[in-house]
Image 1: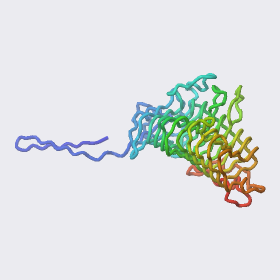
Image 2 (image 1 turned 90 degrees about the horizontal axis):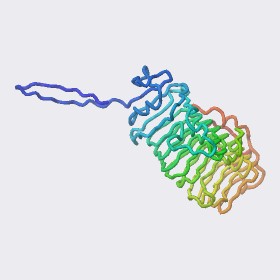
Image 3 (image 1 turned 90 degrees about the vertical axis):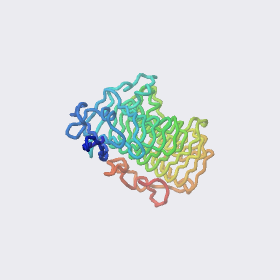
Image 4 (image 1 turned 45 degrees about the vertical axis):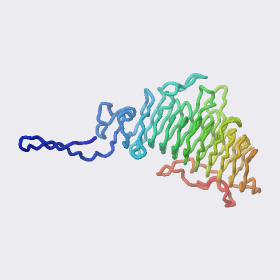
Length: 393
């Protein structure tokens, strides 16, 4: 809002007006609280009641600060207005307060078997916008948790997407330059598709350069931990973990969950060639492969990553890719590696011998995060011989 000060002087019967424009006020912060009212001004003393109302009022450079509590949605949150590169919009939990956005009352929670969720109803938070930062929110029980289509240059930080009726967090269509940082996504399932679709994190069915996943933990989802199905552009995945995916914990009939830790694109060897890059990442105890190209024909790179106790292959890159595997560790999987046309050097199976582990206790890496949201460090799955092979967090 801009303030104007008008000075008027009279000289020899002529009225002269001079308008002095004062500097614009600082970017707006709107507050939302469970005891608020959408007729309020949105100040800390008089907060709004709904996140959607704040979204409709906020402008570029502004912040929506959500006070602690559970926000049960009657309709999903629609974010369609963008910030700018110099003035992004922030939607965040206030301080360290716990904010839960609950989509249980929305449609398709769950949908009927075989049904299709209309595009606008996908996500407790449905987003088609750019230059936003979403931080510190927990999104549960939605038809998708966060669904972001045609989204560019956003930051998603310290989100929890759990127990949704489709993928916890999905980014798709033409979407570039997004950072997904320190995401926890777990317990997501899709009875309407017999468990075949709900992943922890999906970046799929689209394209756009510069998307980065860092510090994600993706576990106990009905289908895959991470899925890049039919995404045409390289995705960077770093310092992340996926475990326990692909098991039918919900007694879904005609179960068809896949159960890969990291599904790196693909379409049966005929899909787009996307050179995804994976580094310093763990995948363990999944119902299928630890890491798989899934028919992606591109030049995937997987470096300093660990596959442990997956029910099928630790590193499965024989589906048509020309992947390059370096300094990776495969221990306790049904099969260590399936290379096909890919190449491998400096990995545990290249070096040979028996590989023992310093620790198989995952409690630190899967437990409470550090104050900054990072995964806490431990010696989980570190080779006992000290070799520079496999992931370290």
